[in-house]
Image 1 (tube, rainbow, N blue to C red):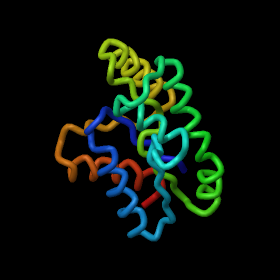
Image 2 (cartoon, rainbow, N blue to C red):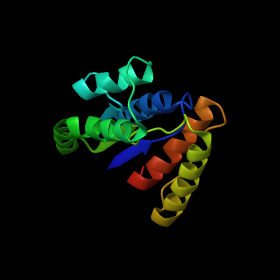
Image 3 (cartoon, one colour):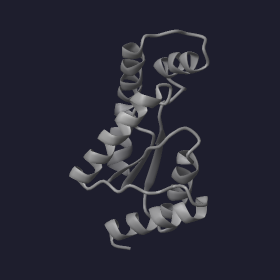
Image 4 (cartoon, rainbow, N blue to C red):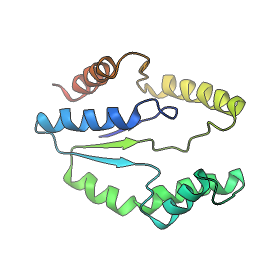
Length: 145
């Protein structure tokens, strides 16, 4: 099972990913976690330079760099998937926060896709413990705990 935690910057994705991994491991569920972008790779370093204003790329190129960054980790993800019951992805898709109108459109499309594919959306405006509890409720129901 792959669980992707998505959201805007500073929404608490990393915190919730770590809390979820700990909770699953405490239940003896083999779990691995991946963060994207992964700045340890060659392409990840270019993304980091872009995000810190050291490199300039057109939007299309940065989109491809994000996709290539995930591709760089593909073999590691496959190996991890073979060894673990659950993979947690902290931000699997590219972020678009620099353009607010575009972000709003992406959010609307994301919500339509979530409804169509029965993805679970969680309101993370509460405390990190409240959000964590809501995530666990959904995950534990899905895996039968």
